[in-house]
Length: 96
Image 1 (cartoon, rainbow, N blue to C red):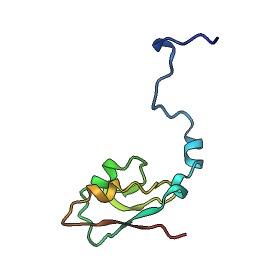
Image 2 (tube, rainbow, N blue to C red):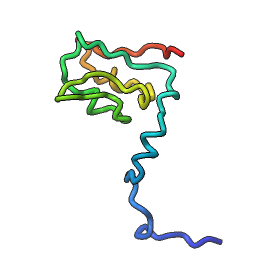
Image 3 (tube, rainbow, N blue to C red):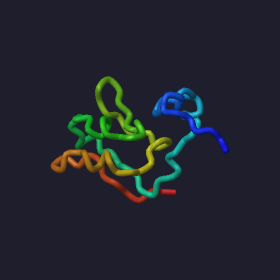
């Protein structure tokens, strides 16, 4: 029987050591719906960028410029946190 490790011996969680592997693991193929960003409606509140769990919202010079579909999993959080009156991000069926 294997000896259990104490909590002091466990590695720290949520530490990404191999960024090359992360970049190569393009997870966008998993989604069935995709966020569609409308730049004309966007008020640059950055809520989508703050809450995106995949860091798929592209921000340049402090402004949203698009969505990186290679890594977006289609969870819809960005659309849910976009101000209701604005609705600059809507979810649509994935195009294959």
